Image (cartoon, rainbow over all chains, first blue to last red; front, side):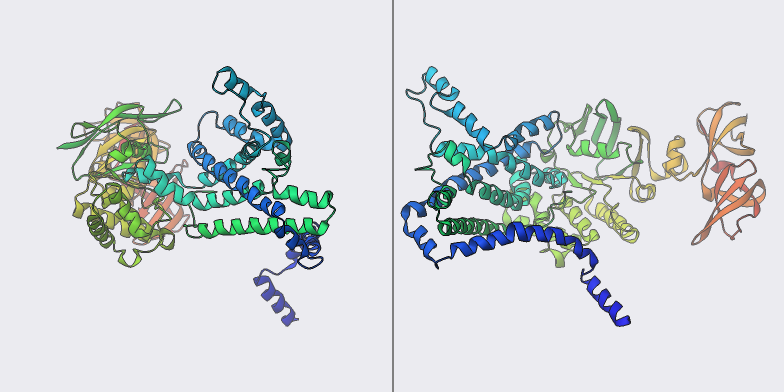
Length: 289
Length: 345
């Protein structure tokens, strides 16, 4: 009896007790909805050994989709983070109309990719408002081609990715104690040294995380690459390659292999960014949140 | 010689005066304490001085240079924050060197002065650590070193001791006073702790609801508070609403709640005025021919005992006793008329 209770105490001290059973439903859901399909896909991709991977990497048309996607996702993620920082920095305090402005900036998240693509076609297309204004003002002779190519997809990625990056960075910024900048000011630092010597280093880990998340979102771009892109050429991204393999060529093995390659590329970028992040200070930032 | 002058400094938040019309002349090397309960405007005053809050009205002058229009980074004041506000990503050494680097001083001088400041606050062993690895008292010392390393013309301290435990608070109090004397720094110190203010400052400014109640030396405030609010803050725990029954040049006699007391009037009083009689617990003593009271609570406080007793009419009195009474005992208490202050209500 005493030995039994002692064992239970020892387990409880390590956090093992009956409350752990509460984890079961979530664990089951993860197993059924994530782990099993993932393992199944991995298995599919290795049907016939490395054949599917060989097919992908030996065919330049397939292989180049990695580079095409990176060319879209990396600059888009970078721009989203870079544009969010000054706006969030200006908006971290309290001011009248902050909620309205935040709502406006965040609206694109709720629109969905298809509506954004429609809007882009109407606005930036050859007969859209943007080009008509440029033409009427005599600034250009022929309409600028801003849709159905690289730029269309890029704009779409910025529009849908920016609110996400902005919200994340705003919350990271509000986690930095505002007294730190005030202290820097009393020590003689103007706004620029205050920003780049105090706020930016404290924000850097948050920027890295935000970059990773927006990059992963952008890397799996699919609808806008077709709707406002050039899906047969310059914006034939890796997800299109996977889709073709699965639903046009019915080569599930190749499609799974492409999906695995996608994951590996994403992981590589994320690992690189987090590697750089570990060089920065990552501890408390003094604020709440 | 007046060196820093605050002239009608006022700050409003949303139409409400957080600080109204603070006028104060500060001499070089003086230690001024701004004292008052929370919400009295003392931190507002400090932030206005530092330049972290713009003034709604009034002006601040230093040697005939108008300061209140300058941003904080151009005032050259050192500030110690309540939360210390140490840069968490910089080592102790780089925290202290930050201000010197901002002044673009030569590297060798930055190094020399940083070393001196680290030595001054005895943190040599911890110079390479991040603030998160230090104890509260050590962080406090870094914050002070960071503010004084610039040899600022004025050091502002915003409740710097409020996050420390009682023992450390006493040590740091002496430490700050010692630094103030050895460096000859002019200091404005904000606190809500009247004991802290009395023991450290050359002059005190008592604030209430954004208004100055009294400015004076610790002795002046302690023995001659200007009104009942200052008296309340200076440890006059017995504040008894009463009515004047007789006035002579030296003594005012007041009555109320079944008590008759003789005291010293503050301001002009006439028979029939509603007043507040203020007595410190240590000035109420057990003695013959006094007010009969029943002892209710006795607290041991080392050299003496704090006693709460009630009169027959139910008025609670705080007093000190040397011998321990038992709750329920009936005793009589007396007070020296010179130590009973009578304020207009």
